[in-house]
Amino acid sequence: MAGKADTRKLIHPVRDLRNNYAEVETLIEAHDPVIITKNGRGAAVLLNIDDFAEVEEYLHYKYVAGKLDEAEAEAAKPGARRTDYKAVISRLKAKHAGV
Image 1 (cartoon, rainbow, N blue to C red):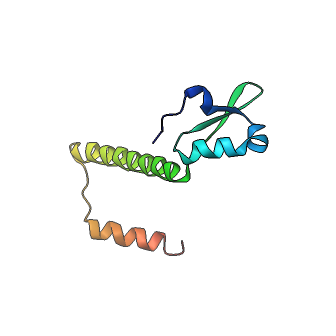
Image 2: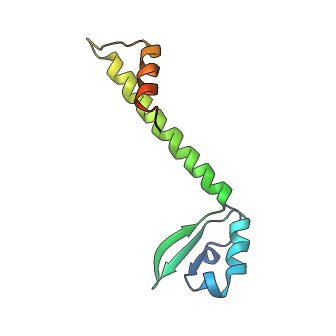
């Protein structure tokens, strides 16, 4: 995801978004995250839109994997109730029909 920029070049005060945007844009286009500071403290991070999409996808998969782990642990408990997946799909479709 990140290129090879010097870490010091990746930190910019918020005013650089207005005054030196070309430099910030170059870093973003090189897939380097840019840390934006306000009053000397970190305030935000700018990412290339493709890198942001990768982060979002990773977080989604991590969330789903965690929920699958929880479901598997629950299913392994003695007395766990089993439901046919077709019944679950039908209930979900009915519940979210208007969405």
